[in-house]
Length: 190
Image 1 (cartoon, one colour):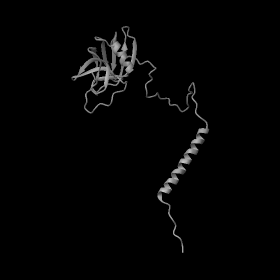
Image 2 (cartoon, one colour; image 1 turned 60 degrees about the vertical axis):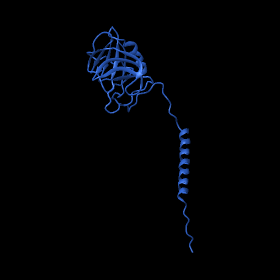
Image 3 (tube, helix red, strand yellow; image 1 turned 90 degrees about the vertical axis):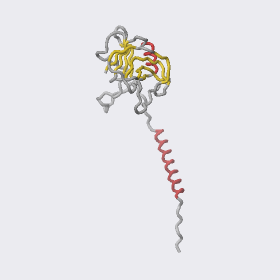
Image 4 (cartoon, one colour; image 1 turned 180 degrees about the horizontal axis):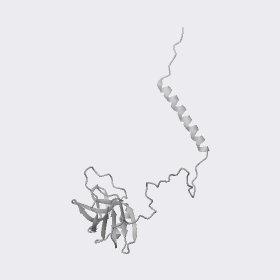
């Protein structure tokens, strides 16, 4: 009389397969650790597969030209399309340029003047901000340069929110605070 075969419970199969997989991963990790290791090169060599196209990310080390038609003399230039600000001295030399995060409300291209300045407040998005330099009012919304106290980029705005904060990194906020005294010209360009 034949004896019925005993089946292994499913947990035994799962345990066995898991154990084999873990041993295999450990063996492969040890082999990989003993193989050749990548090393950093002091001077990167051009790759034959490197693309001839420029990188999509801007090169912050290269100077960015001040937009044409942005005026003359000491001023702050704000390009809506480039999302960039320039601090221009009296001799028309660019002293600093940096990228910004605009709010949902932007001023029309034109010439404005720095009015009120506030050291610190809470932004309309609930973020603690500092170095607030007001220069325009658009559709009842005040437009100002500022930076988050913690240096972060602004959160995505709530649907339908109207925010006029033009945010920047903390170091750039310090620079615009020192440069953008009351009465300073702000030239907004496309």
